[in-house]
Image (cartoon, rainbow, N blue to C red):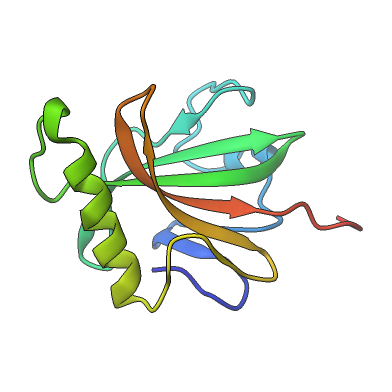
Length: 132
């Protein structure tokens, strides 16, 4: 799933993203569709990562990738049961030896449930690296 040494995520054969990836890099991918860099950018279709299907969202701050949001779509979960997806995400992270909230030199990985948005996601949050 994610390279724990550098924080890179290989979404598919055409897209590997991580610390240092910027909105200008995203513009060069086939997923760019005149998106606004100030809003969450969702890839237009589910992506298969390590045999699991995810909706992938990217959030940029000051042109740099700040957050990757992964929402597992392998099972149908109704809106009233969305918190169940958080458990699915916790289990996925555990299979990779990651605990929610675990910090790395490049950032943090969190399994999160957003009450306001009623959505569970795996969030990969990158710390801004000076000298970029």
